[in-house]
Length: 256
Ligand code: NDP
Ligand code: 8X3
Image (cartoon, rainbow, N blue to C red; front, side, top):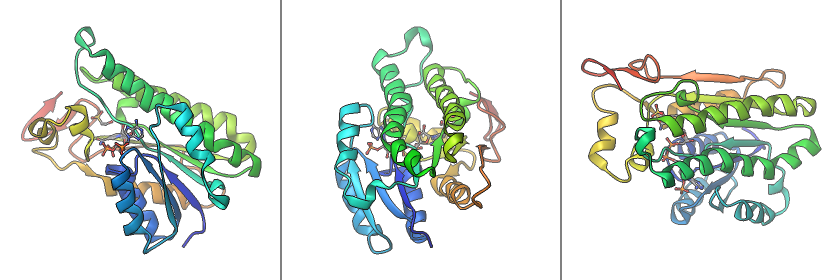
């Protein structure tokens, strides 16, 4: 049971959606965000039976849209206690010499700048009350680099640096900053990476048991329910079949 207000970016799918569903069960008040309004509407209707929930639809890449969306938050909904910076994706998987420039822009703009814009909109309220918790969803790709992952890995390395920088800057205000770095989680992630190529994205998760979005949601719940003096600063979580960013034991051991 909680009265805390949690804002989740990227709640229309995967890790964000699973987190909204789990936190609704524990009665956290939710602000769910994403671009796909129909999905947000459905989620609000479904989870509204369990908890107080509203949605905000904006593209994290658009800083004006981010700040104007936050300015529409009614009354007490501005008093956000927990921010889950989850929105993000990989776009493409290509060697740097033939990388697609639009894919590069998307990854830097969404995964890095978008995370910053949302954080900047939420932080004044947390600073004012000297309390709050930010959970950044990084990746094993923010700890290591893998072939053809160049710019996605760079964007998640940036999240890693921003996560550590936030913790330093916000220590004076008692604001907790935590990061979860998952390995392979079966969500819509690979469908986005491979631009809707279902066969190619399904192949990523074949031959081993990947993590599922609920695994990460459970960790988020664990992190935000630690005692007030405890902060889980950084966590790497992999499927048992994954040794690191490049080695996955499928039918044989695959180096990707
Ligand atoms: P999904 O593709 O299932 O979900 C991505 C979410 O991000 C969607 O809700 C999408 O909402 C939102 N999003 C994407 N672009 C934007 C945008 N421009 N503006 C607003 N929202 C956006 O992937 P996951 O759940 O797997 O990914 C969630 C996070 O986890 C990402 O940061 C990803 O990098 C990270 N991660 C994923 C791993 C995996 O293997 N799946 C492993 C490690 C980290 P909408 O399209 O409605 O805007
Ligand atoms: C997503 C996991 O290994 O596909 O961040 O980059 S990976």
